Length: 327
Image (cartoon, rainbow, N blue to C red):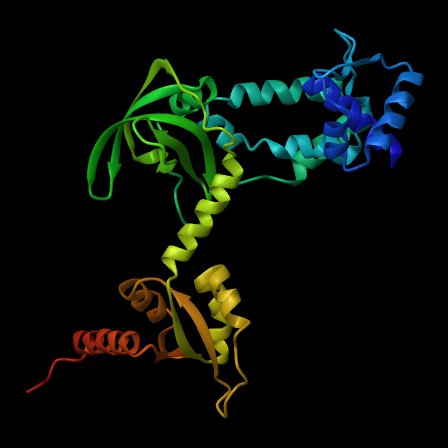
């Protein structure tokens, strides 16, 4: 709707300052000609939009002009209260700020929208922690977050799987994944960006020295690509598995998205109702443990070395649980 677009244009100028017509068109996904018409409409309605000419020109609002939040719909107002998860905000040392911001926002909303926001808070709760796992202790998270925000280097003491290291890091951003906090940072002496689990920091010391962020770096794009690389590295071979009807139901629960994708490769059921699937698995040792969780409801057909490793594991278990001979 044009009214929504006009409000979006107004908020873009208010939040970002001067913007060119092509920039506004790209943000609003409309043509430049439409932006010209919308700016004229805003001016006609009394909004003080100025057009600056020249290479550094663009559209801007008159200095000091601010709009109020009366343009929010009930769904938009409610979503603002869902966007801030109190647990992660408290981890970052922002719990009080979040509560204060919500109170201020609620006070600024019209009565009907404030009531809608309170209803959403009563009916929905965001819990970022994964099931059956305590959240990581992150005593240094607030300091790390401050260094990210202030763009200051960190001197760190970090526990890796193969020992402890001391490094200076340029902290670029924080990511909360499945209840676990990760720091995306560049070691000061290197160009490569890496990921660090915040709970493994044994000590951090914010430094006065700042740093330059890598040109064009996007935290969201880095994380998406990093997650893809991790998935490809973890699941680097394919097992051919014969599954019972019960195992087919268990597959998504036991293997998550990998199990769901395996279901798409399921062949027709055999005379016993069992089907063959191709399942992406991790290293052989991990795959043996994962596949044993399916118990007697699965049979690994290949590759031969994985089938042999499972057979060996089953023989060890059988020997361990075999009843002792009685005289």
